[in-house]
Image (tube, rainbow, N blue to C red; front, side, top):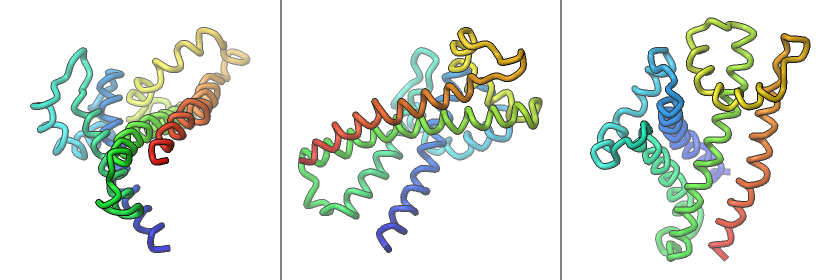
Length: 193
């Protein structure tokens, strides 16, 4: 019971930073506006790590690679702390275990990115009905439009008004979690055998 509580606290703490760094990377990659309450909060939450990392990891091709590296490092810190606390500590940190922690952090970062996309699509769909001109609409539209545009070309709105593409995108993202991400997790877990 205590292990579950510790695991939960670690996941919340490191997850906050992982999601923040990842959202910052995606916002810049999708050219989403930062001049909104969410954008300002993300910058405030992540500046402490992203700014120093930019000296080592420069942005290339219009992408803020420092934010992505920070997201990976936050996920790596979570995986390492979980492994050290609940496996066999530093004594069990063999080469295979180290490779497991490094690869598992990368796979969990992919999983986090897919979940982030699902949440953003749901938020965008709900806010498009409730508050289409709200302060977050520009941000959410910028984050979802590149994924919804190809679907909208193929699937027209029902009755000219009901857009099913967010639902279809969520189904596709869930399939990504079930198939390739799950396969990656099983492959990474085989490193410990």
